[in-house]
Image (tube, protein in one colour):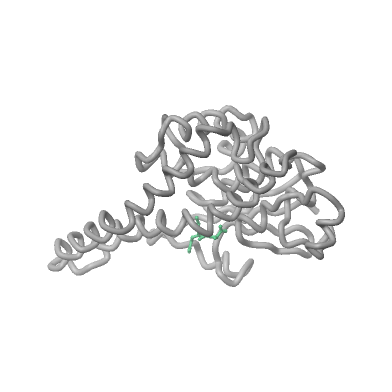
Length: 242
Ligand SMILES: N[C@@H](CCC(=O)N[C@@H](CS)C(=O)NCC(=O)O)C(=O)O
């Protein structure tokens, strides 16, 4: 039975689509369209209680959360035992189960960077990016007569708190990518690149990308697997137009 990717338009699920194309494993896509309020449709709750995407189903296993789905391959059997997981049920999934040695950093520092950026994407940088989006949407949710006031407050919160935070992240990522071709160094993508793919696209979209980030986006976009993921994934508003 092939892996099923539960894919939401304009979403983080595009990361997983890119990875599945790179892995070359058989998979199917079940498409879900965002509702007018941008939330996922209720059918996704039947797949996973949070009703968010990405989620994959692989036989009996249903697993959510980008970092857990992408996973990374431990460097040696000892470390695998430390993780306490087998190939069939493992908390960090696709690369470990299907990677066959691909997308794994080959240096110690590469492994540290791979692990860091794999989890940094959702743990640290996505929250302020999502906050900025929500703050920009908030005025339209307010009754019309207080909308200008809400807009003013949201703008102040955004420029005072959120944007400086995003700038710090963009500086960190720019500095890292100006010294490394891929997030874990090396000559091709690893878990960290799949996890960070949407983040760097959003940096470009919001005008935070420096030359290191832009060069990285070009490298990602040049990969045939990325292009077929774009063809198969449908609407993805974050795709950068450099
Ligand atoms: N940390 C989760 C975030 C999942 C998430 O929030 N997905 C968004 C799409 S980018 C979603 O499903 N939004 C629809 C909703 O919340 O109803 C992950 O990386 O998988």
